[in-house]
Image 1 (tube, rainbow, N blue to C red):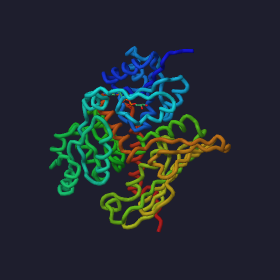
Image 2: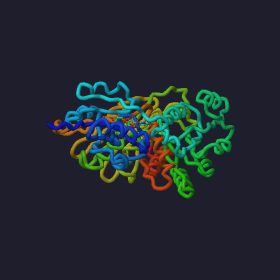
Image 3: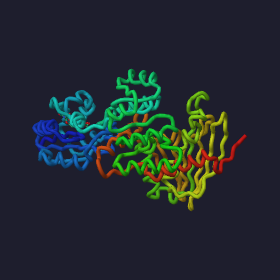
Image 4: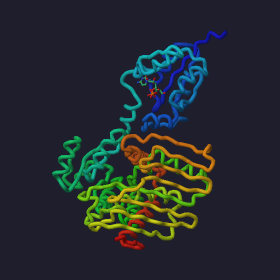
Length: 449
Ligand code: C2G
């Protein structure tokens, strides 16, 4: 009979620090054998920790380097602690006092000890001490409000100031959010090193160009611009100045969409033959999004959403795009588009004044992917097959409004200071702007009565 006392503890151990060392020492002192569970990157994402700086291998190395752990395991799912305690015959579960009471449910399986926490140091604090991206807002409407709220969940950034030519609206926004108001663009640029553009579509090009020329990184709402030449020009300026230019697109950066794409690219439903995607959002007739003089309408407002899975999965080399639209007061309240590549077809529907099922279906030679409405806020999807026993459901976090993922990407791209892999490639943005341009110019558009 072995009389060895086994202790287990868990953590992310990001930006490994003295608090972690003290905790591990205290845990080790409780017994003879210390098992340390290190969370995987996916598990942290799932439990809402989106700002972790070190990946799981780096964090494991940091724990190993202390020489305090007799055994290191990875923690990858909720409920695993109960399994581990039983599997490894653990006598004591130990964790910092910030979790006081939370793990009492483990008392059924072993002794639970809450250890004193080291004051004055934490991973969050260390992250906050790193360089930050100072973001200036251009536009202070509802999406800017959501941006401010979501940015507070992302490390290493702060909202430096906001600008809107409508000074009264800007003032009210700044007051509400405790943000400095910039009287003009020069003042805004003086206060920030990056901008988020959330103004009406037709103003994006001008603002983005001026910001890039002033040396600011740019995150711009969809659609980036309304024609391809402008998009190309902006990316060229950004490249020549070594600046980050990203299109804000919450779907493109959320965890579920990324995995859906890689699953399909790796052949999970065979060869892709067709995509159907719809994004409709019924909007008040008086809303600015319905204003023809401000390039409102369904395609301009929502087009980038269904085009994202289409271009990502079929490539941007399509032959032609045909549109069918219903207009009211000079804007398309509903548009359906059909396009073909050499090997597949795609249809998309957008609407501000008409509603339809907002799902995404990707059809393949071996099965299909189904993402239920609203698919553009992807948190769940299914892969379905002829043999239903093969069907599989996938679930992911989609925290809050979902903007935090794109904000994190933007901040990381700036701080990476060099190589950065963009989750929304330039050629896809160019293809989207080409489609917008053709639509605006009425190319292959059939108008319904
Ligand atoms: N810790 C500490 N003193 C600090 C900071 C952290 O004692 N100043 C402790 C925490 O209480 C925890 C361990 O170090 O016991 C790891 O902390 P984190 O890396 O923040 O991980 P955490 O999110 O607490 O993981 O399954 C994961 C666990 O539930 C907890």
